[in-house]
Image 1: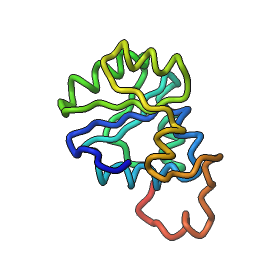
Image 2: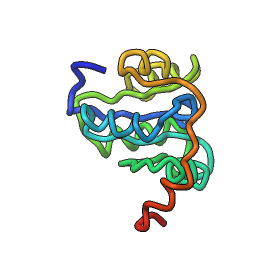
Image 3: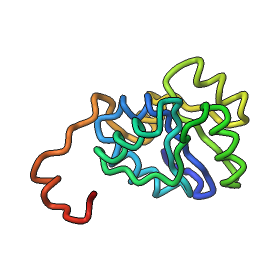
Length: 136
């Protein structure tokens, strides 16, 4: 996503992250042009935590045990950047973003603009897991 603002908060719906083959690389890339990057989901906290831990994603925020709209409202209030962009997967996600006052971007459009690869997330290899002794 060329020309992005470092004054931007970028939120990925968990379903959108699950459509990217390298969610860890996506987060690392997004950090180059976003101030804050995190995950929004209405799933239980442990589901988000398990996914982000498995893919070594360090998020600046996550939705916790509340609804997605409330989460978007809280994140927008907490992170006062110029732009707030929500990456989702459906018309429902687009309506949610609009209701919360966020810009919406489909995961397909975001992937095309930022040159991210769509597909099932790649599993971590055993060698990669063993090379990190600081990981819980």
